[in-house]
Image (tube, rainbow, N blue to C red):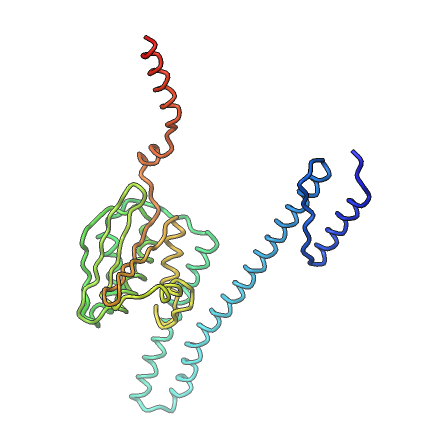
Length: 304
């Protein structure tokens, strides 16, 4: 097969253009090994371009993430520095107040640093989730000590409608459930009830948390699981809900939201991934061979 000089020049121009950032298309719908080569080069170049864009997007995302972390840490540090400067010359009552506020800021920073470390491990897929069959009631009992003070302050109660076995990593699912319950506490009116329910089907087991708040619409939901977007929530950092979602996704699961309606509260449904072994075998069974055997038997019986 003879390759025309013009075709070689065209291919060369394409490579040069790609190097300088130009967008060219050398694909052809013709037979021949050289044309196949041109199409392959085009596909390879496009793949490389996509990889470069993905790296650039990841780099920009990481840069924004680090800027957010810096801002979130700077706020409580600045607050503590101001109070520390005023502490020495303040009246005894004010000193007690400043010390109390500094302790609160330290606790918030400790929570934030811990949450960020957990998020980093989840992002790096550096966590080996150990899944076992755990009762919802057992998970809830582990959550309660972390939210007991908040429940008492707002005169809220938690009710478990149905206990069920959840196939999940106990430690990490407890972390996610705690953050979802804290969110429910924040949006529930004082003296109301937070409902916890659970169940399972062949595809997954689930836990739902329903608050008694005003509910939300889809525009509010869009930012709910974005890191640092809702900075008035989750200890003022806006990371508790995104952390919960990362934990569920790390287990191959997800979090669904039932918006209900205004004044009807919001329900969050945690779904650690779980597929029943029998159901999985059923779904992957080769029915074609069974049908073929059935048809063969049917034909033989008809002939007989």
